[in-house]
Length: 162
Image (cartoon, rainbow, N blue to C red; front, side):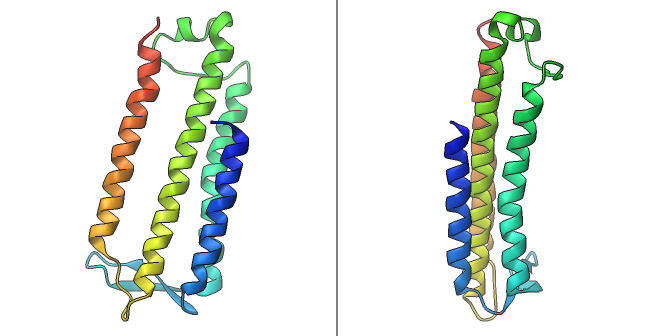
């Protein structure tokens, strides 16, 4: 994945949150108890501002800081078979692979945040506002399963080849 595609995905995520937020009431149920019932509320503008800040800030900060730090010749990179993967003839390819992996993780985080926002939109469409716990838990399980597969593939790359 390249950084331009990631930037486009961030933009699409922002558009998704912006457009779907129009369905929210002036006071948004933004926190939910274990039962799914709303127990915390925010003004509409505060919720949308916070959601957009999280959506843009978290994945972008993660990607930009990692991208920048990996580019440093003094970067402390801990990998299996580190001497092999960071040898001068392979360092550029290794850093490129790490950067690509971070872009994929940032994308996964974007999707997760958009999904959580959508659950909040759906919850606020009910009276009283109620989060569907099965959808929340299902999304969390899916996120963790995808994350584990991503980690296995990502780290597995460094276990072979040396």
